[in-house]
Image 1: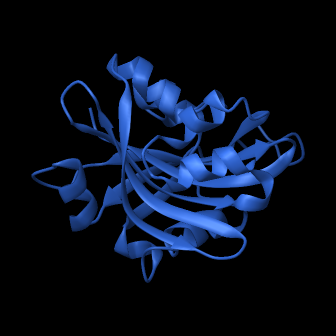
Image 2 (image 1 turned 180 degrees about the vertical axis):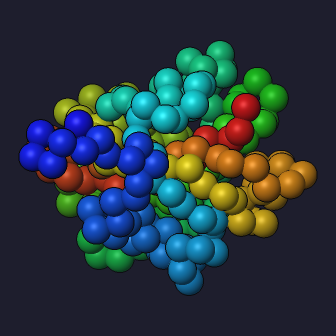
Length: 193
């Protein structure tokens, strides 16, 4: 309840003025507009169904979280990249090593100035999930959850997830601070279970 108004906020209300710019900026690195990936509605944690609440509503690396949930290490498939002098961006899938099933999709944008040379080289080699690289290189980091999302997936996202027909998917936007600096922006959408 809002102490100023006495009203209870709508748990499904969007907060486009706060969260949508980060979401749109990430998606539009690889798509002409946000809607080309899907329809997005911001959710409050308490209305996010399980197992998605456990998978998404936390301040930890998704690599570690999806590996624990699926009881399998994951590999990264880099679908597309963009490089500038200051940023490296990629659109990725994470797949279970046990059977190759896709467990996560998302665009990522890294400010390379905040990464050490070895970690940057390994990330840009496109062989290892980002979270694992940061952990193995002992980069001082903090993951900050920004928003939780329900997504009505586009035909492309349905195809990537192996969905026969569209169904709600859930994801999050997050920011990873490396050595105290905001270095990595992420949209992480998990495959429906």
